Image (cartoon, rainbow, N blue to C red; front, side, top):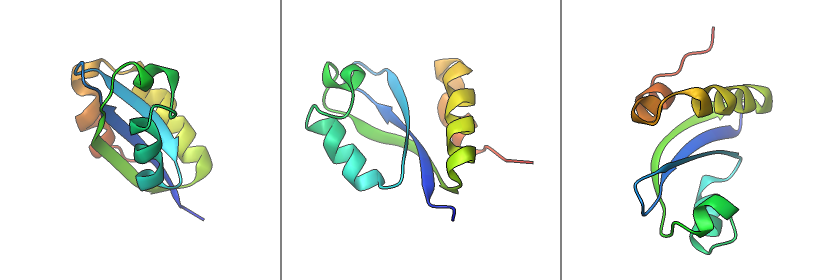
Length: 85
């Protein structure tokens, strides 16, 4: 079942954080509570910058790995326009 998402958060210092989730609302809330990840904890508040939804678990983790390798200024457009072959 394709219920996984890859998301990018824009942190208060304008950096980007990439992650994988099945429930984006809950995950965004967790990040903003300071318990989502060590990286975002020091850069609150965070807001959703981009999301790619309806992925399998395998696709989501592969996409996250690829997005993390892309330069920061290209991550948002890459995530929005990603196509699996």
